[in-house]
Image (cartoon, rainbow, N blue to C red; front, side, top):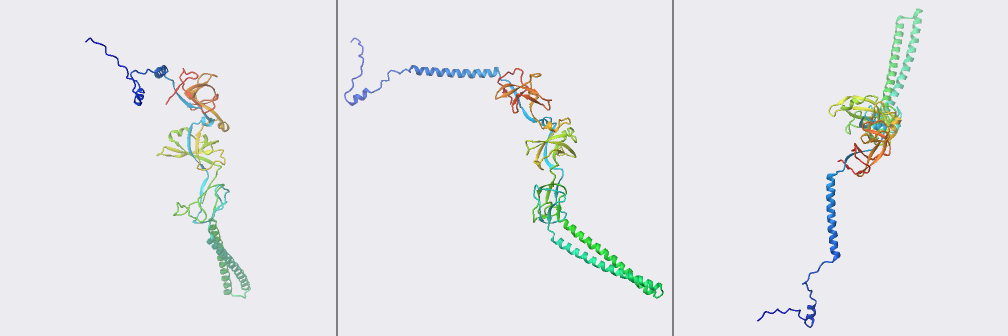
Length: 426
């Protein structure tokens, strides 16, 4: 039979009924669906963005290697006093009074009264504390009675002496007239001599009784603790009812002192200086004292004494610096910093004046065209300045566009330009 083409199959007609309806809903997947034009455009844009980002990253990576940012160092602009700027040496220490004493009693006893409080100003001779002394009061009264008795016995002895003197004179007159005997005259003389001896003994007894009274009064005086000099009560080391003992070092032996007294108008700083720097100091050298508790004030000082004794374990020497203009805001044991100044330092008033000080290495230009590079974030700007004094310890006082607190570039590269981006050295 001759070959014939196979007849093409056409979809079977839907079957009648519910089964035919469901067959008509079947999806024909024989042909694929192509994406729409907006979707293809979105994919193209996303691809181009990725290529741009990669190109940008590569550009900056290459630029950082080929054109690196200038690496600079920065230092701060300071607001300081002239005294601080001219400092040759700085040392820390604590305030103390040149005249300070832990005042106690000469004898042991129990405290009966303390009439002063911390912060009270007292004069030399004022009573700081009183110990119990009722037993001494009784002894003093007894000794005063003994004085009165001795004085009465002395009066009796003087009367006896006067009578013996009269009797002796009478017997001498009778004997001279030849009416008396030698024996009677001798007895009168003996009676007179005995009365004189008794009178002298009674005089000594009165003096002894009076001395005993003075001794009792001095013992009572020792029960009072007096201020040895004018000053301020810094601390109360004991309270009423406590026992004290001279040289006491603890509760087992009793308190050693009752009051700590200090002259607050003669304060000084007790500080330590390294042996290496001792050659930079001498007695009478001016200084400025900064006290942490008084941040708004700088006090004028002077090196009073270099203690001639070193500490070989620490390699230091103790130095005393007197404060010349102390006020009522200062008191012992406050921490302080001493700025030693050169001898040719300005006067005290000028040393207190504040100014703006910039690192000398940050100044650029010549003459009146001096400027500094101020670092702001990671870029620099030019700020005009004018030196107002001589440089000291790498700093110079300036006037101009700086106000203090700025970060300036030190030893900047010569190619630095206004607004240039820089990298801060680590």
